[in-house]
Image (cartoon, each protein chain N blue to C red):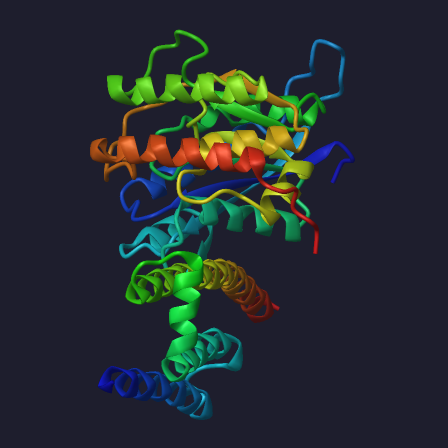
Length: 118
Length: 257
């Protein structure tokens, strides 16, 4: 019986923490959405655990806990894949900016040199 | 400036090449100074004039690479941190594109390439016979530096991989001594492979319809510093480049944004 309370409290805490992070501007909404959806789903299942059991039985899981583990596993794999995509994008942008900065710095130096001569 | 004059940018990527880079730049300058005029071709073309600029890309070196290159008379673009040879060379293409160069030549900063082959490499491009020229140390038995057995095995593997996938036979696909025309400069300024870019760049170019020509050059052993590809890295290099080439084959055509 207590496990439901614990599960609910933990998922609500995570949900609140994400919202707090957004409020403090440590997380932008774009990245917070995924976490809000996951923790929202966790709250839903923690409160309506009968529905969780029904889902597990319907999908053929012998133990509801296995259903939870499987679902969480899928969610985290997807999230980490998405994060890798973001990381890759940031990395590319970083490279492009480094190249641009280096070229601009060089051109600026050349320009200054030219101005000094004249 | 005569109408036949071609502006050539020599791109020299260098990462911690103190002790090599100065000599490399001076060598290129000497070649550029002595031989600005190409002999007329067999078809009776008019002689071509080359105006050669040298751009050293200091890829976040921690030693005096940039100063040494500048003292030797090269233009030096310093990347704020180490981006890897692919991105460094790409920076050179971007500079060439911004400043409207006709031809870009890539030479490694470690002094292994003999700059006296520069004109020979540029010639097919000047004559409009090729989009991309690869300097190969395996085409002729010219002697010079060849490289270790394991490295050669890897190179043979890439020769067959690239040949099988694209039908182009390049005997020295890892060579970093190359010349490109305007079309290739534009292509590679926008997209150039990272990490170990040389074999992949051939595939990228071929997919874009480039005419790739290979000419014999002589390579020397390094005099200072160490190669970026060490023995234990060879296997990783092979796997990475193979996967990258295969991935490139199934990649969507990039939309110009």
